[in-house]
Image (cartoon, rainbow, N blue to C red; front, side, top):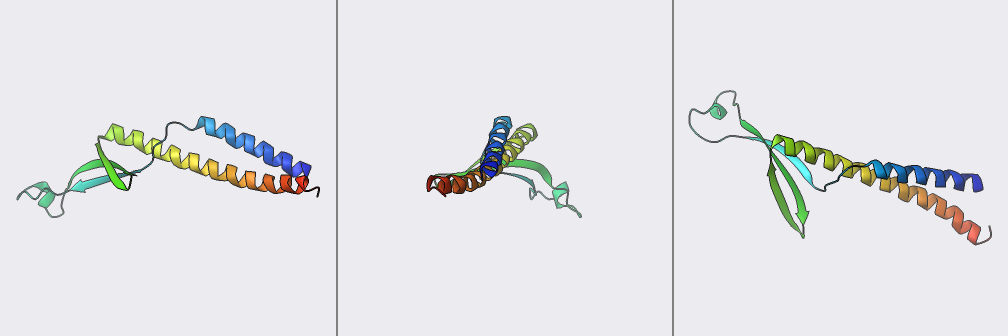
Length: 114
């Protein structure tokens, strides 16, 4: 059991080290849209249509309401990275929780004397 506990502790420390490598984070989602303007004769009305855009938008929910921000291409790339970093952070924390749960089972058995 001590060997498994040591393995869990080492894994937990390694995961904690990975946390330090995660860059800036952001909640929310990023969408790219192409639109039609409705002007007669515009390229977006052609066959096949050549829509305007892409237009980028970041959104998140704050207090039950959706907050959105229009972005240019460079800003959208920053948000794309930040959102990916947040997903990476959440995956690491989930793995830390699972490792803690398994180590905790061993520690609880040891505390009971078994």
